[in-house]
Length: 277
Image (tube, rainbow, N blue to C red):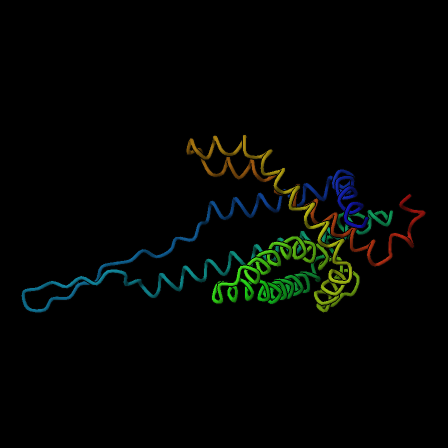
């Protein structure tokens, strides 16, 4: 029931908190436009020649060290800016949904002020969650490799089944990490969210599957608008502008549903039942 409740409640939370959706949409638009306007120009190979007698030798593929370092610096700077902006938006959005679920009022200014000093924490818990997900994926990937090496269909299929079952669980896990950080206030929230996910594995699997199906449905709805333009070679900025509302809605849905699911699994909703219902 937790997965269905979170899935259904996510829609109403997104609709009730339109300002949060607009914040997410704005962030995605800024990131997309910056990527388009300031692309990373990977240094092209240059030909370096030297003469030996009457023969001229050309060495291709040599890249200027200065250009290579500049490219890395630009890439790192953009990644850092994107991570900071998205972490700020994620904390603000999740905290807004948190307060909305519990029936509490909030002001954007207060949320912005609270989110700013929490950006490093959000970055760390998301990074830890990413590393934990990689570690979790080692088991099914190891089984797939073992099955291929030993030519055992049973082990191979078991590994494949575990891998595809892990995807929705990890998706749910990611959506619980920042709510856990809001409650605990420390980077151990990544482990807290992991424990909560596996203690309620069926709910995590169910919500993740519903989220995947919802994302697939949004992709189908978006395709008639985007595919013809992509084929016709229209300006990429136009395509980004068309995709952004769909992507923002999916992100908002994922964060809203994850927040509701976390509060439900932790018992906050039962404690605040009179406020909600």
